[in-house]
Length: 214
Image 1 (cartoon, rainbow, N blue to C red):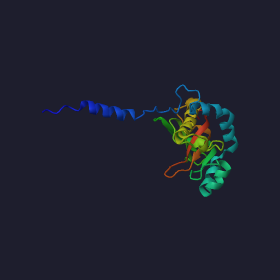
Image 2: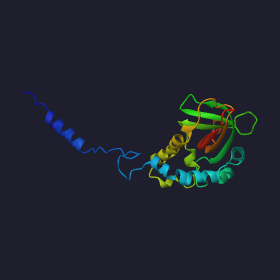
Image 3: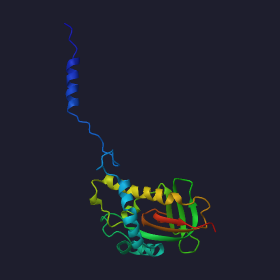
Image 4: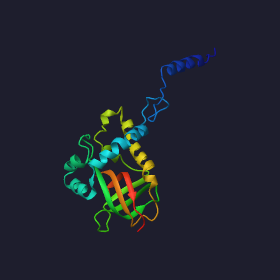
């Protein structure tokens, strides 16, 4: 006698397996219309003028002075020019003022930079990001009123760090000239982190001005 096919049994088994599995929506880090959703861009916008800029203006030191101390005693430099409340395993981040002459510029990529001579010897001492794409989270990490434990998770904290770069690029750096930069003066208020493998300290600006052509 021919054996009957087992399709109904297979269908029933598959139905049971599917019913036991719930498909949950992935929450959006930037919000999905929910007023209470995390919105890093709005958070940065709200504190930028009121807290971020005044803090950096008060905390920052001249780049040459900060960097000299940072190379010999990072903890002392961090306590004076950085965020003493940083996580223990995180590198020190320093608030600085960079003032000098532009000796090189790379504006061909979205991660544009200028190299600035602050000591007047014709050699670059700091590399300043002028965006629109920028690496790192130095601006976020330099602030002593921003702590990882204030955030729900690592993703939100990371998004918050990126939002500082995006805000600086949109409100400050987008207005800078991009042509014939070598020989001009630059004045920058920002922050940097000492990292291994860097040719020059990489400064992320919160304020920046470039002088006229010489």
